[in-house]
Image 1: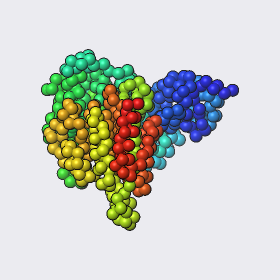
Image 2 (image 1 turned 90 degrees about the horizontal axis):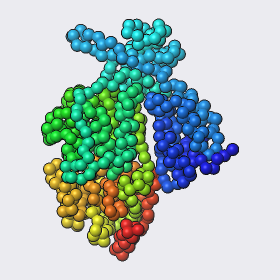
Image 3 (image 1 turned 90 degrees about the vertical axis):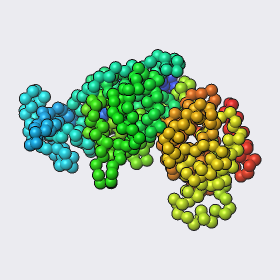
Image 4 (image 1 turned 30 degrees about the vertical axis):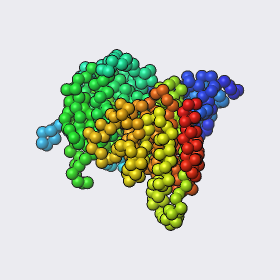
Length: 594
């Protein structure tokens, strides 16, 4: 019989709908986190999905198929479809059919030590299937190995064994996962060099500092208890929710040398400032490894750009050596959704080191989210944006799309152009300039970011507003000075290019005006809204300017999809005149006051 008090509706396609207004909805959401993927969290129904990867990640953390099925039965409004239960048991049973174990190292001809691992199949059938796969041909050697220290429990098991190079550990796991075989990795994580690090209760600025409960939960979910299947993972939290603090908390739990990799030099400096302000570390324990300064200490903060630099396109990556220096016990990948392809290769090698991925949105337009999960670590913690907004941990935000007409003198050029040129013409519409000017003038109490894709457009707007501008060509020292002046209130309006999309903390910004973007990038839309989500006394407003009747409307709808799934709705306004623009600004002001 149906139980209409229960919050969960389970569908045969393995999607789970959570009624957030039903009793026990919070308890149910907490119970789903270990084995289901949160896909959408709008106002009334949150959508989760059961996937093979989510079940295997749960199994790796010790959650059985029986546990998952019992959770569904406990919270389901209707009977759990039999096909879903059968699928859960079938998929979960694959975990453990392949085990990765330590193997003795061997001396090479040159006297160096070559390190290996064993991959052991559960039975002959699985062994033969792997033998026939491309993975075996490329990475695995097939031969019966007798392991004398008792790792193999039977002669039969030793005959179902492969050997692989230690450096292929992550690549083999990733490749086998792609053909439906999860690997139970039983090779212990290697401890790093000990580091005495703890969090302060009072910051250097004499402010009380307390890690929020969800930040503690997120760090502990990844670091775990040191057992199998713990010590690595990805944390997904909205911009403004304090992902850096999750990183600091994880460091204080591990207490070992740490390498932090982030998106740009300004973000490196912010990490260093947070480390000095909120931990007991001193400046001589922290190093910067960037294009400007290259040193390595107990805690080192580097950029993805310097790590992926090489002299020519076919050359080696000389800075990859930093990954093997200094006895790292933890590597933190900030904004992990931006992980460049060359770094994936290194991450595949570094499977013996604890690793933490931090991101606001694990959305990649290239579809490589699975690589992040399999190499950096599965999603261990996620929380709906609106839940944190409701608790006051991030700002309430209103999203407003303003549509302007295309200039008469550009209509013919637009009509005959190919799609990429059409996007540029629509994005760089000069009619947007006047709307930006009016929005800024009508919002005197706001600290405002004007954000865009095209540098010539941004320079034009900065000149109209008489405001400073930051682009990729702005020197680091000047960039940091402008950011600091904005934080200190010396600058009220700042024009920024896409260099400010990630990892920049401007806590007092309360309004953003987006004048152009990268085609249909959902990730960029979420990151730009995130610039104004730090908690503050004022509600936040996010204006997006779109040229009416052009491809920009289609790209805008695509960009907004992720935020709509997080529960944000866009109010639409059409601007044909200065009076319309003033009305739009006034409506925005009313939303702010409301």
